Image (cartoon, each protein chain N blue to C red):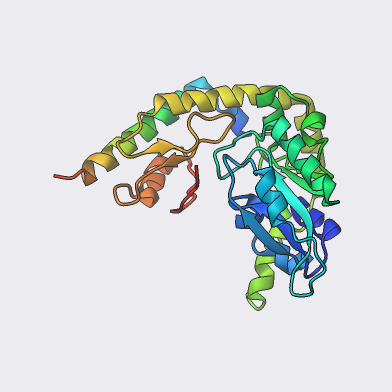
Length: 32
Length: 260
């Protein structure tokens, strides 16, 4: 298995996970 | 290790090698250029990894003044890792090689991702490497599973500096098994690199950029995406930890100025 085996579905799941964590991280530190 | 062999073959202790300032040889080979080849490095900034031939020419030390370290080699990286997998355009690489040739200075190509560069540019690896005097390629970049342990020498605490260089140089245990994987990759994986690049672009598209964040160099050309996050607003360690729980693994390049 190499990272070439990450398929389109895997990319979408990774993107969703990353987007969620970034959004949460940004909202936690946003200026009030 | 291939880069270090090239530096040792082209160089000699007390000589100088021109490199790109964020190149792997400059930033990520554990001091091995000094420890193994005995050369000093002259880092030059670039635009997306492309060295300015005028600046390179101006940086060459060609005199015989004993105060100076004569230039024996210049190096370029294709694709450029820390600048987001940028392809070194062939015409720019040809020009760089031509300028160096005028002065009798050889050019080494760190082609760790040369197959990616070929897949993205449409040029053959022979075309991309042709202007260089030596080239290193790396099978673990998208072709063969990484094999950290077999290639790494054990860390020796009693030789702190030397151990780091030795780690980069590596020990070639079980090389027959690795070579079989490399042969398989050449036959079966190269054509899949374009899919890898397409998926990298898709990943970049799907992740909304938080305010203040950017993708280094814009949209990915190959298989590397570097999200540049404001360090005062994002805890990268925590982001990596959280993502790892979901089976998503990121590399952290650390804080710093990654250039244009």
